[in-house]
Image (tube, rainbow over all chains, first blue to last red; front, side):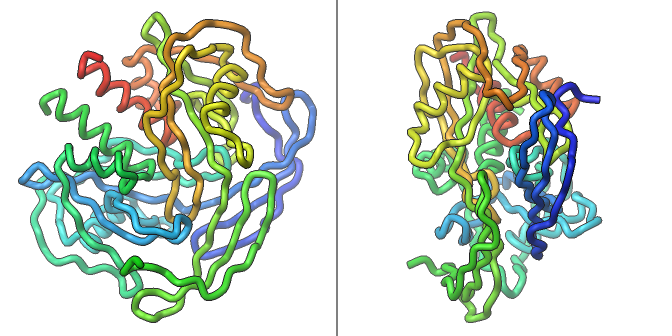
Length: 181
Length: 181
């Protein structure tokens, strides 16, 4: 048992949506005090870092309602319950960008916001790209954008690239280039 | 106006907590279809990447209720409404680790999960560390841990370092070392 464990005294579902479930837990802290924890449960997601034959990374531009604006991100998508992350990565890459990757390798996985959410994101590297046609879902509006490392860092500087997985992807890419891999 | 904008037709607050507010919006998509968006509103957070005089990065181990386990993260904390991120970074660094940083420089900022949340995280580099005593809040249980770059990558491999900001921090640190900065 963890020394810092927070024992659940009571748990209540507040909201059950298509994407998230919100839960309010009452917990006993290690010092015996009681507190509440607001929890967002999510089925997880995948994202793909893929560099094409011109040394450009593949991004998608899309509107994000929580931010009320369009941003540039690496291709990503939500896991269906029970779905294999590998399959999801392949599917989202093809649907959103039209690219097929000969190889998809898991590079990292991380929780996006462990203070209140259990969402995990699996980060893949896609190599051996071949180009096809994007087939986004009927209600999905995305535009493919390809950038060099330098352009991508400018886009981050300008605030167009501004989400955790894509910022992590850029630093990963930079280390890879610096290592000469 | 953005081509991909999702026009809000209706907005309803589902839950108002101490940390998050959950909102359900009905939107009109660019193709005229209607959909719903589940949104988690958050006041934002800061995190500090700090390397001490022994070339070790400063982390904290803490229990994260959404994951039901302890993980290793860079020091971080939630912004109070209206709080200056610089002040928050300084405060959280001192409270959680006991270290004071002579300089705190904003390196990046990103949305942790732009598909459903508006949480932004400001990522700082802290330099010129001097050591004092950690003063966590009464109900906060954290333990300071210092790791070399190699140890930190092992901890990521082992799944102990597993959150977006800390993974981004490790790749940032690695690029910095490779650049010889």
